Length: 345
Image (cartoon, rainbow, N blue to C red; front, side, top):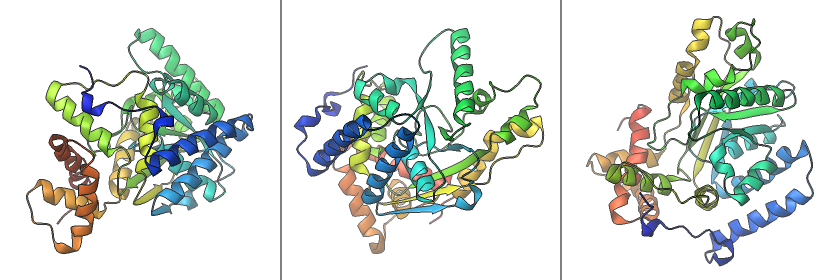
């Protein structure tokens, strides 16, 4: 299935006309210029500091919690829910760097390296790459083991961030893929108990809560296409950079980032159930906003009180950028989070 014409995306930055698009164009140019002056280990810190400063100006408020659990002199392997291609890693790094805790290298999918501009930016950020796409099982296992070894090596000198699942959460419900945790243990020495190994890696949960999801328009469109035709036709080699641009343009509202204590499984059984502990942490710490409540009320046909009209107006403004028949999916995205995280009217 091909992406519908109304969702054709303009990736020509020179043609950008809106003020926000122009600002993003300027940002990408500055990043390109920045890369000329960077080298080696300083790349990650400089790149993430730059983007973190950008994000702090775009979001209304970034609240950071749980930094007392993070030690600057010890490497952490952060694992969080995954809502946005770029912003999740940027915000985790912004939290760390603003508290002098050091930068974290991000683990990203190989699909993001298909587009030249995106590949350059991700290389500049010192990203580690997880293989995506169809391939023989043996080949995939070898590549995943290599990635696990690279994460081990990276943790010798920095923190590492990885998402709880492959691909962003598209339906507003965060759930850990146990295969991610199994991949992390592939580099484990043969005779070391897995629970000791994971404790040693200081696997640290992070919950990221957005008042307004920077990728909500893309997700609403994708969900609509999947319902309509059972699949979503991405534009080859352009979706990554376009999502990056759209995320930067759409940054607004409040964000809460909460770090937990590192997991310390005491047995193989506990190690095998870490995905459940991570889901429980995110479920407990996820911050619901009025945007979630308004969406849930609208989807259930309830009257929205006058006190919440400003939030509804913001919703309508975001929805106005989408075709009429896609807007329902936008509200459902936030409504799902409301019910998943035990919201109540």
